[in-house]
Length: 337
Image 1 (tube, rainbow, N blue to C red):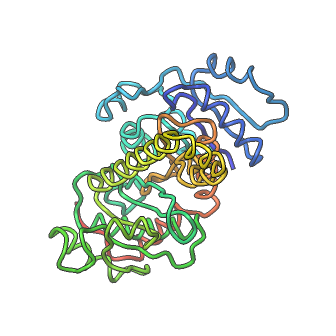
Image 2 (image 1 turned 90 degrees about the horizontal axis):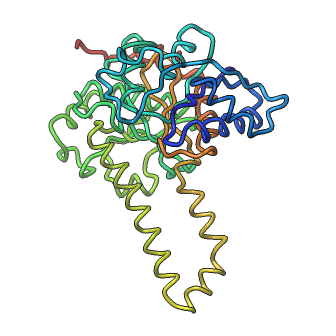
Image 3 (image 1 turned 135 degrees about the horizontal axis):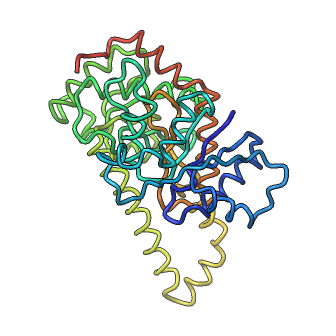
């Protein structure tokens, strides 16, 4: 398969983007297409050993920045690396697109200017992959694409999330739950209670509502929410993990005895850090778009880029797009706009 990497995506582009693409090409053996300013890309490639690696360059004279507004970037920068990269997927010249750039802009460009929606999809959902669950990963959607949602959108998220998790994470019967402030059916908003009734008949393993504490305990493989709640949930989780890590570090360095204990426990701390490191995930798919699009953090390093390509490969090999298209066609969660 051929995977496009947005060389102008990260905050420190194109260094991490190019290095990560090379790691992916070396580890997976599939062709990687770097899209962006060709001069900058070639300058960065010259710093690495690239002999024999299946890496290509496609020039894109414009780049989307984190300051660009999603509502206008589609027309303002039609030759951006995001436009060019997604059009390669649209035209069948590549199988997936990976970017660590402006998430809102990526959604807008995919939805309005290039790939469009899978037929039947009401709203695409941005996913997040959390380091919890039976296999160490829990899929959360939506995490920011749709701040305000309708019940039928959440039902579609549940179906798409279940299919994605089964096909890429290889969980035969993923448990799907609706994020709420309690397990009881009476809890939550009117929208959540209506969504419960729409999700129940779907051909998925739906377990009802779930509280945040049970999400962190791995109580579901797929967790559904509107984009506002999902975005706050994942940002709070990331900030809480970072704060707790810093507090532990400060206390371990507070006394000589604790420093000795910290030295002895260093291998365990490294394993914990690796388990919760978002860069080990790399990125997560924008589900509902008519093509595989993986989005990651702007602060991503080369390892995150490499793992973003890994996520893209899993989605392509799992046939996620066709599965969502077929799943929606057979379900009853479509509704009028």
